[in-house]
Amino acid sequence: MDSTVFPVDKFRTLKTVVRNLCQGLSSLLFPTACIVCDQRIEEPQAVVCQNCWSDLKLLSVDIIKTKPIPEQLDAILPVFEFNDTMQKIIHGLKYGGYKSSGIHLGRLMASRLPREFLLKDTLLMPVPLHPIKKRERGYNQSLFIARGVAEVSGNTVRDNILKRVKNTVTQTHLDARERHENMLGAFAINRSCDLSGINSVVLIDDVFTTGATMNAAAAVLKSYGVASIRGLTVAAPI
Image (tube, rainbow, N blue to C red; front, side):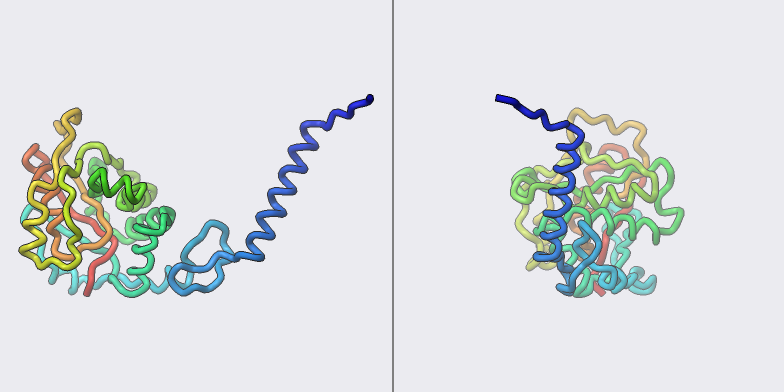
């Protein structure tokens, strides 16, 4: 019985055609919708439409000045207003698995930072999640924000120095005093890490409210001799 050998290059071509056809049919039958406005998105892999990205509003300098700087931080800079659009984007980033939106937020933030905020030798440190929460979520959203910032600024991201050792309760319904108490002893330094030579750190998180989380993280870093610690967040409420 004769057998015909199907050429490998033709098989690969056919496989590519079938894959592209399936992807095209999938896009036609199940178009991607913006997680904010639910409108159809034409860009592949996008989860937020350009109109909604454009709806983000920078936090005014006057409002930033009204935000109390936590005692262990030298400065705090939230970049955008925490409006309805931002709330949905961050919710999708944290709970929907949309990591790409975190990277894009980081890029947008970095393009709007004062030049002196991120010096060349400054390390970017995402505020860590407790291992239990990270396992449940699958990732730390602040790491993807930090990576987006680094893409534009060129700074180095280090997420292996600071660790969360206390699985704190959610801060959403706590007042300022309760938030401070909740974060006591929440962070530590990985024993295998050498902090000598690290003089400048920018902590990165999603939302700034009272700053209790960043303050607790900064306190640990300062106890190990880090001289300059600033906080950078995607957003803060007006």
